[in-house]
Image (tube, rainbow, N blue to C red; front, side):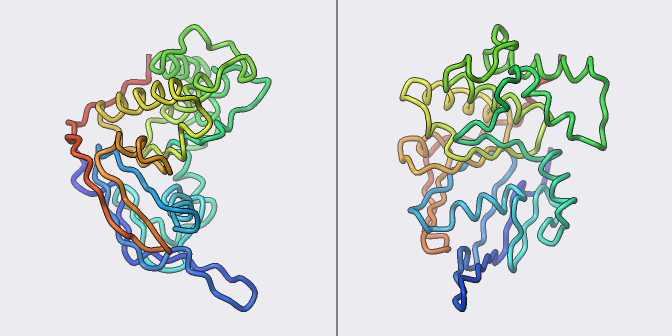
Length: 246
């Protein structure tokens, strides 16, 4: 059992230079997210939530302050080091799916394993892991389908399978239901709930209060600051590994 936070930030700041003016997208944010939590980040446009997501996802570095991911300080890592962290330790789920068109669901899910230079597994093992991940999200019968042959909800399931395949310590979901109808959105949230119950740590950016209510707590941001934290009353589940291997 991990005895440290999956995410910890201290006095996190991100300053952008706009001509002669400095704009503080983040202005000293302290947050802590423990293993197995399901947390939403919310806020109006310009609140800093997207900047926070980019830093938590190691897509950007803070101007000042500290960020520890799974106990490791990643604040000052190089671009190459951050790329390795993204591949090994973070699974991304985007609003726009970010799947390769003209490529099967199976091959889309296999991509993170191809980019993992430190663990070159045999092709047969990559295929089996990708198949197991797709079966875990209910797409065992759609492995050979390409994104253009799938519904929005199915595409998002492929994206979730891809996020899981390298067994990351953190799932980052950026508006995962934003492009979906109500029914498909509910199906995606059900999958995220299942992942959470199996012990996954999930951080989700959303602007929809009814989606944020699915999480254990919602972190509200405004003007680059943490405005308030709302507890949603969902119990914390015992960590159980989510099996994605055959």
